[in-house]
Length: 115
Length: 109
Image 1 (spheres, rainbow over the protein chains, first blue to last red):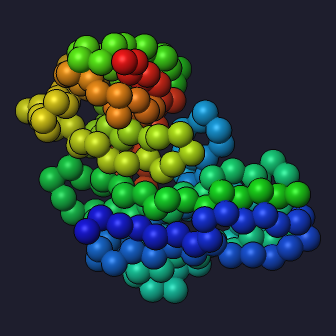
Image 2: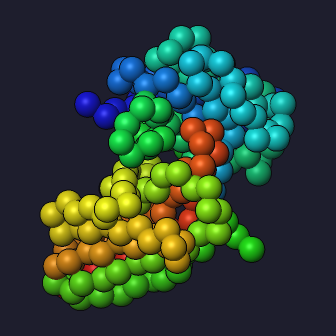
């Protein structure tokens, strides 16, 4: 089963709100990722967790705050976002150990609109 | 120069046609290679990992040419349901990936 789940599917929030996106996988994958995708563009990497430790933060503004409570869960906390942050937010996981090497499995995404 | 170059298309082909996409890359340290398909407003789905020996899955064949630094995806006997955007992805390490801009395929009846 190569399933990554994300909640909520859609989120509309004001610029002063605080909200969280959630991601879960039960495949035993040891790396989890947050991506941001704008229309007609490829996904852009935001954060990477490996063995529950933050491995990389691609110069993402501090209004985005990741959290990895355990090996199956990944959260993205949002605060004081801007309208240009409206996008599809994708979570992905990777087993880190497979013939293909670093293959990623994406969740369905959260479509975020900031008003 | 971009790390990954991919023809954006669109490729408009009739059902039953054979279509090929290429993706060139500049980073020779690339360790792993993938093709993903992405339907409109959906997430990317892993289509195939690309191995040095090439690999085939039904109507889909992926090839890697390290000497010329490109990967390819061949789709035979195109179906309407193959219409999507195809993304090539290069993995340098587990936390460094380069995505192509995607090639849009439209299969028409």
